[in-house]
Image 1 (cartoon, rainbow, N blue to C red):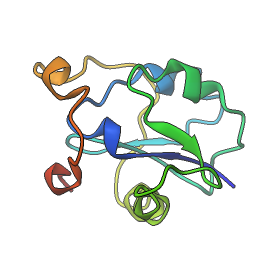
Image 2: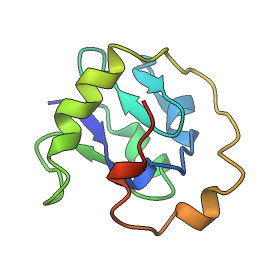
Image 3: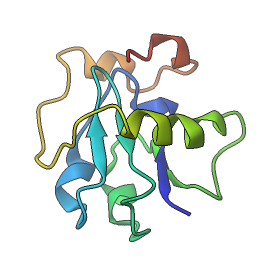
Image 4: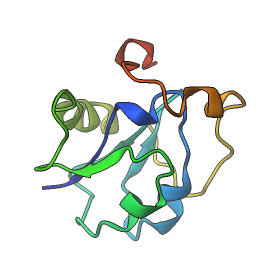
Amino acid sequence: MAYVVTEACIKCKYSDCVEVCPVDCFREGPNFLAIDPDECIDCSLCVAECPVGAIYPGDDIPAGQEEFVALNAELAKQWPSIVQKIDPPADHAKWAQVKDKRHLLER
């Protein structure tokens, strides 16, 4: 099963993970990154690169984050590919440890 970006990424959108992905499976939205499950090869390189711990194997999602499996698949079909690291939003540090951000996800 593919890796999945979870709630911790919302409004942080660090893109360190993008640079290590050998198959360019990341997609970029306004304030969140998603992984295309059809492109992901389960290499796990992205997991260690995420400074907020937002990426998990699809079969090991933390409790309460299960909806992000389907959400990544849905958004990956809508959003463009991102293949190079970009600067995170200006206020990213303020959001790094905030919980319960699902309602802030911009499509």
